[in-house]
Amino acid sequence: MGQGASGGAGQGAGNNRFVKFTRPAAQRIANAVRQVEGGNRDQLPIGFEHPQAIASNAKVFRVATFTGAWSIGSSKTVTYKYATNTPNTAAVNNLFFPITGTTGGDCGIAKDGTAWFLIDVPLFTASAVFVVATAATTVVRDVTLSATLDPDSCTISLGKTLTTTSVVVVQSTYTSTFVTLGT
Image (cartoon, rainbow, N blue to C red; front, side, top):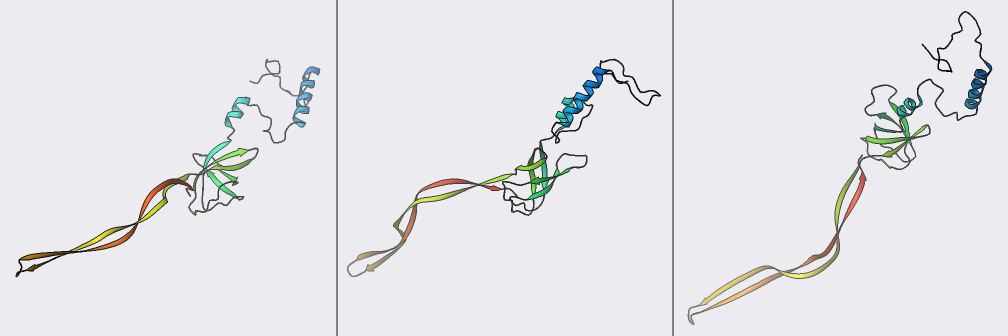
């Protein structure tokens, strides 16, 4: 059974076509109507739920999935992850990420007012090594040895031939990390 404004049992209209209000009750109703008419039209409609129940059901962040490329400045329909009821999609605006891949994937979205915006996508990192300084030097690539025996003088003559080549040696490097979109 419902409650009246004073916390007691409410009274129905019964067989009467009109409900009678006391002057203070009519003034409270008029004040509430004026407040609603002058309020923010984007707010939730008046309901009889407890205000904390409404606030706890409002979603301002969701995890969703999308498909295909998604250019900056465009809108795409995403599907909420972990949502079992419908509607489970939202039109989301992409303000920051140039997604050129064709597969899509997971994303984080947030609501500002009545509009949804893309706020995150998975990122991948890759490391690269860059050469800062080099030096050229010559190294021995091959050695050819030869020996000849002179039986008359009973001597052995040795010979060697060096083959060299020029190489470039890395003297210093640095490492950099690149972040790329995961999709």
